[in-house]
Figure (cartoon, rainbow, N blue to C red):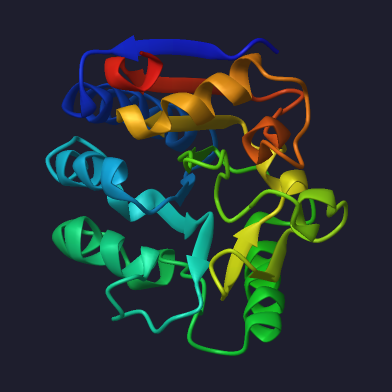
Length: 234
């Protein structure tokens, strides 16, 4: 399926468009099967989105929140993706605690990945299909914690893996291509001139997911949307 590309003036417009689309997707999913499952991402661009979502007409009691990746840190650590989402969004909406499914970054990486995969199985079943996964793009073309030339890019069976990323000298937890590509919807949020070179490589470079990991996101039956600000395509 051909991705949808939407170019917007600035990060605020990206956040506004993303919020509008999330409201629509949430309403549709809740009407269809009684809940909306979404995997959030970290970073500065999602922060603007999360601030906006607080005031949106979303039935949070029917929303299940997950994360696409996490650093191996406690939930109150400044680098925690969960911590960002909790401070900026989740603490301000009426979502049941049992509907918040965080990656346990504070325990051993392998154990954390196994535990999260078990939680995904319990909530989403044996053929997991997120209603929405939010993703970003790093300046090296990584997305989630799928970094260039790392084993997770070649995972075919596991839904969640832990891996040591040499360039960061740190462990990361990440959803893998099989579960990302099973999603009904994937929305990339891209803002800033520092993303322009990576974006050109992903869109126009040779197909080489090992070098440009975001190219590994290619759902066969899902819809991919790139919400991109003007600076990122200049």
